[in-house]
Length: 524
Image 1 (cartoon, one colour):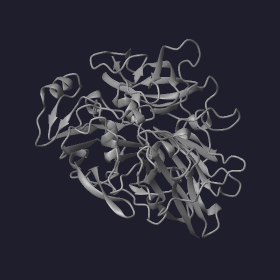
Image 2 (cartoon, rainbow, N blue to C red):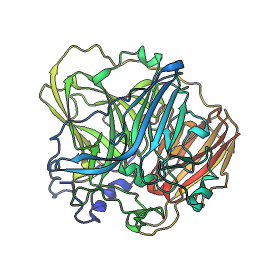
Image 3 (tube, rainbow, N blue to C red):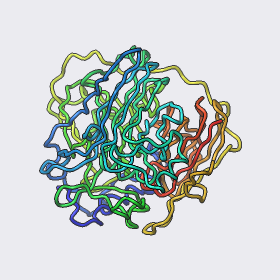
């Protein structure tokens, strides 16, 4: 189960669905994704993978502060090698924050500072990025702000690259300082080293960072064990249970993957949730809050409940990447691309006790078409409710029409051919500024892709104005930092923060970002 006996099998496990085609008009989903359909006369796909739904979902432990003196929460995390039972029958070597995947969850309060000290006990340089954090550039985890291993030293090439970073080179450890001056939201922290983000995240360097505030506290939302973070990540395994990653240079000097995976990015046939392949979660017949994070390197998911609840619309979205929506939105399914977060409510009291509800990925055939299972228990007392209103409506952007201030095209090249991935025809340049903007300003950006890319902006947040030239989908609502860019393009209203300095924006298909699909944003 879950073994990669033929390495080309990764591409047979639903990559056609991953790359996808446009959907017919009128379907409330994103263009670029096609749901799995069994052709007439063909047999339906086989059932769940062998060994699926046999192990309970683990929930990452919440990290305890080392100190809370002076109104500052101080934490320490070790980046180290660990072993973990991702598959049911073998242990797998990982890289983990505190030796685990996902890493421990950090829970922060709006306005209360956090100092997070990361110690690098691995054999390679690392960088930590707080994805979605409103932080100054020296705390953002620029890809060239290397933290060398505790026992390591920089060679001439690495030291030369680090001079083009923001915070400079560090050895052994670095303290990252987060003011948490932003609304409640589901953020995450992960490795962001230049050219090697893909293999580092794939090996396990990712974890949740949850910000809470008084607005969220006042809402009757599910709490404690009914507020569940779900980190979804596909992986491929060799026969011995080790992770398979097709690095073009196993020594780790040259970034990128082999030609077979270069265009698609790394996709695997085993779907893990919180570090376990195809787990199950026993739930009460009550309302649950599920914080979905797609931490896959390249695979998007189109999630649905099987069976759907009576009356449909099993998902109630209450939040996006950067916080709560003004009002809930109801769906039968939704798309989750790499780097995106969706804060979703599911009312399991709509199901009879004893129902087994499978979370399906309906754009993949075979094993990746299954994600996890919810086993519904008895009805219980439940004070949680779906609020009619979550947050005040944000002020509209200064403008939403007219000529775009900037246009960017994301291009990964021809399938099966290794070469630089580019933005506007250029691979990342360490000394080049690709966009210079004013702090606190808002611009209209038009983005296009070949054919689809998840795009992440540092140092900014945005709202979606148009998708494929038309009105956005309902799930496009709210403030975002990552967007699934279809081949028809997107128009965004991008609001830049008040911190001045250099940030990056890039494709969050990690193999694309590693091979050049990244650019520099200078906020002045």
